[in-house]
Image (cartoon, rainbow, N blue to C red):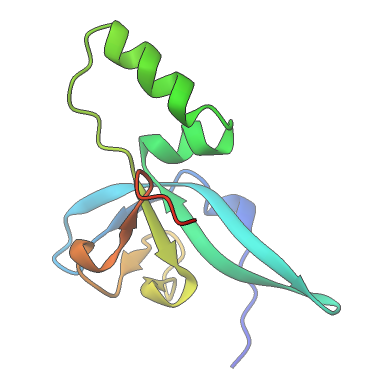
Length: 108
């Protein structure tokens, strides 16, 4: 069943894990063009996603470390099929956090 969700309304929504614990807010949604349609590839969650969106990951982390921040939880990449949007106001992961790639993990 096809369903339409306004993606702009998902930005900033808090995502919880399968136990209902907060994981991070949706900061970016990545999609790929396939013919006449756009297909969601992944969602980026958390503080690191903001830096990623601004292409400032390395510089941003260096500045924050200089200012005294030591533990910075970067964020997560959530594949399209691991986010339950049955209730778009309350998105939930369909997996555990250890199944997600963190934003600090770079794929070559």
